[in-house]
Length: 122
Image (cartoon, rainbow, N blue to C red; front, side):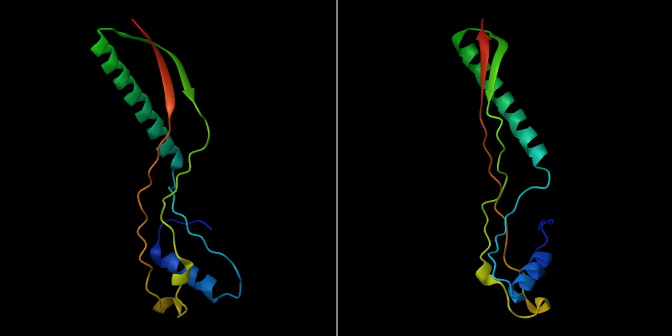
């Protein structure tokens, strides 16, 4: 099941699961609706950061940064999830309207990725 961050709706869903006769494990994960934009921004930032550092090193050596020769990048998927977890033991057994919304404030999502850039030096 997937829906935008809505604590009231989440409370209702968890309450209904708790009321059901189903013997199930409940996990709640928080992610972004547009992960592609985040991945693009991450790669853009990495490329700009690599170039700036390479230029700084070249200036320190009295050299000029040449053409980009190669980029090595692992094209695997990036997991974009908050580390926030929900304890299903907190599900309210009273009617959904009487249940207080759980105190859930998803942690910021921290991402990292790596690429190797190789330039000519002149």
